[in-house]
Length: 484
Figure 1 (cartoon, one colour):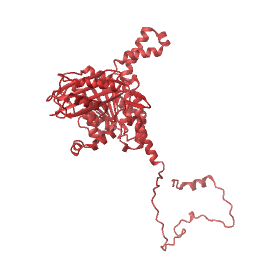
Figure 2: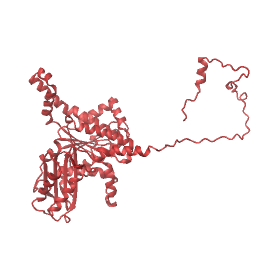
Figure 3: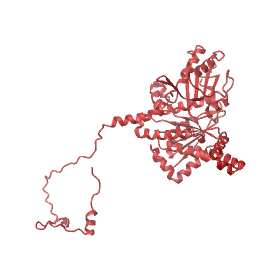
Figure 4: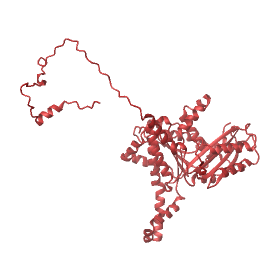
């Protein structure tokens, strides 16, 4: 039976860009979604450092795959950044990709990358900056120029920051918004990867908090979280995916796509509309948290069961460990600021749970338990839904998953602590001592090598003064290799 609504036209038009192997494979799942007469739901692009990884994609059109033709950048984003800075041909190719391939008419551009590698980690950071320079910076400059022309250069010189602030506010409504989906690596990727990922994640979070960059939200799916969830699945469920990475990519795509299509069919008892979703996802900035839970309709007996399903959904995340929204320390309450939030339930058409009282009960619970500065958008729809009740929650928050906020650093320092007292063994090839049991009597004169003999004058021990030429002769065949 499946979910009929995933074939709807999306509420928010998006261009999805995958950077590196991990990012491209995430986007490749989205490229498999279609609506209408086989029309792809999203404009999907892939950028990688070599052709080989691009050939492994299944759904992204060949014309939308671009290679930097570097043969790979390895798991070293710092080195990759140097190449992107120094190689003029590669810089030009990346600039052309952002300016020519990423179509500006969409309402949201989503950049995807895995933060454990070289290509994705480095190119996503450079592309965010390039996208700003090409798309949004000219809008600010245009508004600033107009203000100066209207009010004069003297007024501008007297209040330059004020002019810039006003120009930014005028331009901001015209920005093409960016969403960043940056996946965290597993612990098994090792301390060097963790250190570099921590540095680049900080850079992305810094850019996300710079209003001028136009980043609507950041998401940090966690491969360690997916790995542990995948191990809990039954053998049958695991066989539906080749490995935890494919499982992770599917979870990311499903959570975004299902919310983006569930609200466009209409016919709902209480309807979240397209503009509601745009406000929730595109206004303000921060980390976007998505969560989803499902239960068979025969297990949901009434409205209270749906309310309880909503409560547990809001507390969790499908893409990483939950963000601690509220904590109490020494009688002091600390909360994360939530901007907008959304709750949406899709109920299979085979079951009716009344007039949607569970929506009101869930809204009351959210307002009592959490601090939501913005609006809580809500929707209730009945579609073909594989005989399930599905609850979706999403919110944008000034907070990060715990593993990113402090966990990566802790994992790195734990590794350092474990290896602090470890003595690394030196490896060398053991020599074989030659026991001189043969009867070879070699004579320098007989072999014509008498010139190599150094004669010592027993009676005269004065050291002969070396000329420059004789020093050169001594050093000519000297073995300068370092032996520990």
